[in-house]
Length: 197
Image (cartoon, rainbow, N blue to C red; front, side, top):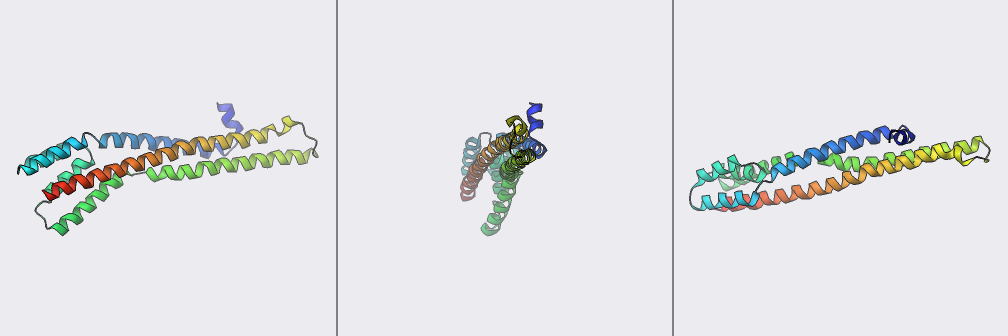
């Protein structure tokens, strides 16, 4: 594996950095999203039931003791229940945006890695082909194929490495964006019901 890496030339190092960065972000966001979604529907329905019965303090304690963005925004909504509607909506909107930003942290970096890695691979392809053609020129067009192998290896290895980093990064980016949109939608629905009650 190391021999293959070395045959890819100097552009393999930035591709390696991209792969390490994207792997770290993917692991971090998976953990964050798994923690952010414990029993969303159960907490929202229990809090709603308690608010219907007029037991808002119990609903508040339930939301504060639970994990996840839906419970956090519900707790904020219950805290703000005595504020004027316009002020309450503004504060809830700000709090919701802040919670979504925390979930979305570093996810855009995956899109950047997904864009840069194939370009690095393409650059490696171009430099590898330049080396191959320089060898052809050196030997006056009569070249043994083994002489060209180094440049062609570099071209192929960097292309594959760049795509190998970009594809998982882009898949993870779109997956996380979808999950974060779902959580934001759950937060809006849950807080709208609590505010209405």
